[in-house]
Length: 85
Image 1 (cartoon, rainbow, N blue to C red):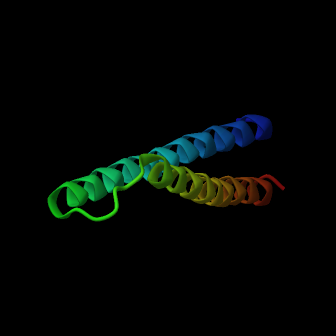
Image 2: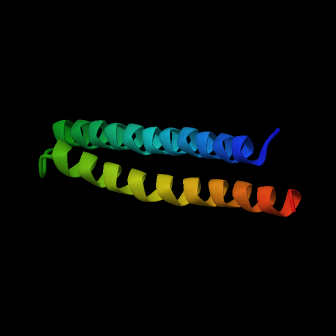
């Protein structure tokens, strides 16, 4: 397998990891909003805003997805460069 193909495969793995982590954080945000909404309906208090909760989830998702993708692709490319010297 060529070095270029292996580098592209690591990049594809990184894209899959990014999508998985981003989806995880957005899903958690949706569950968090539903939990806050249920608590509001049961106890009253301040009504939760979906836009606020989801904006935070999207922001956290971008940050963590980028970090994990960078670590995985960086480690893959590093081992690729060490292995094929």
